[in-house]
Image 1 (tube, rainbow, N blue to C red):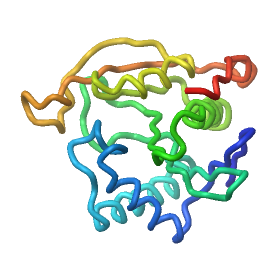
Image 2: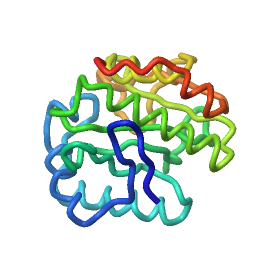
Image 3: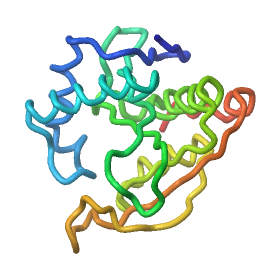
Image 4: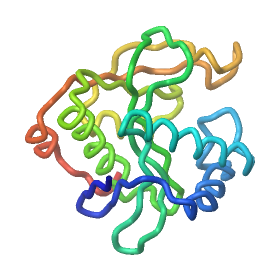
Length: 189
């Protein structure tokens, strides 16, 4: 199923998405808040897992397409982490957009839609997001979509004393589509 925002389409993954997905996952700037950029094999494996989870749940990390160009811009959506966190079990919202699509407000625009789908269509009660403390751009997106900063924690998959080990958790409880639609849409961030 496809979902539309003003400028974007959140849709199921297609085979043609694998190449641009691998390119964005290999970009050190895009991946600067992750342990490493991904190899093509790792990226393809991740795309496969995303597709499997979407088939299982009916929701997931949707491929995001720019309406005006038809270009694959990255992903935005919902996920159940496959590892134990201090606040598990949870459903998280996440995004990863390629650098040419930064600064256009696409992440909050698509994330608001993903929240609406999770809350209204699937009846999810709470959605979380988390990122490395250093990742201020993602924290700004979390705040723009109405999430509240909660607590810091050490990410279990990041090695001890690594600069990205300390993470911050954000939460948002179910809100109506009307409330989400009323949130300001800042296209400059």
